[in-house]
View (cartoon, rainbow, N blue to C red):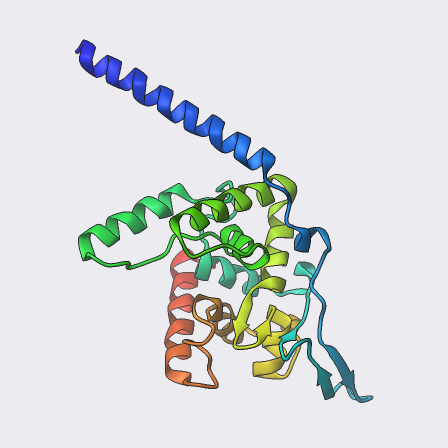
Length: 231
């Protein structure tokens, strides 16, 4: 009994030291400069009197755009959370439950079945370059926790929708909406929203211009999650 008690005390001590270490690392991590600068630069667009797009001047061949969260329909925001991060509103930037689930699935299947990156981690990956290594993944988590200390959830979600890649050479939800549906993101219906928010998981894999079937299956899975969640 005493042995288990000592083990528990040692374990709690190690967890405490780990939490202190994480707190120090997050405090020392600089806030990403790209987020401090505000929304990313949008492509220059020229419209006619009826609002039809006549021409678009891109930055280094990449279509980009920005949108305010308040402009978007509620069903689009719900679709984003259903697709990428159902516990976004409750976790601190890193979802331990999702990490444990992904680890368990990987052990049982002997391969990577699902990811555990939160919306905040994906944003961190988009604004701070990191190597695709374990050390790089740990740094991504630290950056995500730092972002959560500086911004509220709505600000993080808005930045995510503006900085994430939605297709080959297409960055930001509004740019994707105009590229694939020829209209601003504020006018997307539920099915269109579900299709677009599914693209960041694999911008090239799910690109509807390269194959509608995969993109449609991904869209339908997101619509099912929305239905199961009652949204």
